[in-house]
Amino acid sequence: MRVVSLLPAATEIVAALGAGDWLVGVSHECDWPLEVRKLPRVTRSSLDASLSSAEIDGRMAAAKREGVAPVTIDRDMLARLAPDVILGQSVCDVCAVGESQLAAVISHIPDPPRVVTLHAHDLDGVWSDIARVGEALGLAGEAEELVAGLRYRLRHVATPHAPRPTVLVVEWVDPPYIAGHWVPELVAAAGGVDVGARPADRSVTRTWSALRTLAPDVVVVALCGFDVARARREVAAVTDPDARALLAHARVVFLDGNAYTSRPGPRLVEGAKILAELIGG
Image 1 (tube, rainbow, N blue to C red):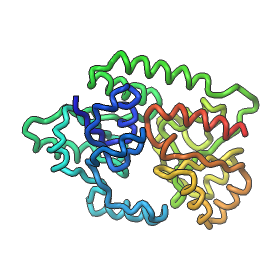
Image 2: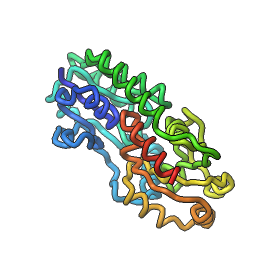
Image 3: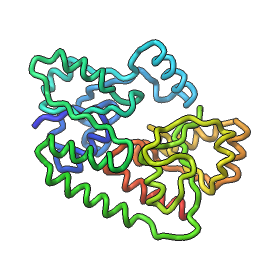
Image 4: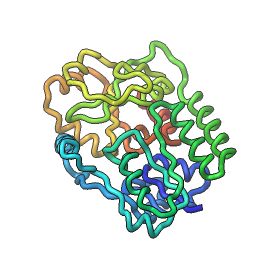
């Protein structure tokens, strides 16, 4: 079977199912497991990843106003790869190809491949997406075993302790965004209480002043698409006085959001484990 993945989480799911060799093309963001970095890139982004948080947010807002997709599909590459299955998503159009854009591309393919759309907003949705990929690849049993193992590991991430620390997870700093979707569940599994969002909430922007009033014990900086080094630089550049006061009051820890919180796939469980170590530290 020939599989093209347009989403890093989908790529990681395929690999976790033991079908990594079936991948013939991936998105420009796919970087795990390491061997997928050698595969053809089927998408490209118009955004310069070296821009600051504020600049990226501004470019994204401009693209939305102008009706321009920041991520596009290489149609010629897709045609040459001739996949049997394409894995897409309908959660976010910022870093990945959106559902409508993919549908428009597929409509021009004479013998269109099967399209599997992932759309998790919480952990149950992630488990369902894994099952959906497994069914499409003829690996339903493997998907069931994978999900059972992930659920088991998640239940044993943290040792219960009281009082549970209050936690705020920030996924963008300029403007500040609070991590939603499955992140509050990861915080709970890690032994904390998320004071910024509830499970399945969308990630939303809030003022630093509003975040300061939450008075969390721990602020977890897990920036979407950025590793720890980049996150530290972004936080160091924040000058808002409420932000500085919040970060001075709380214990601030950093997590690789690109790898462990932004991607609704198997590594979320590893992210919860790291969160438990950070929150309990």
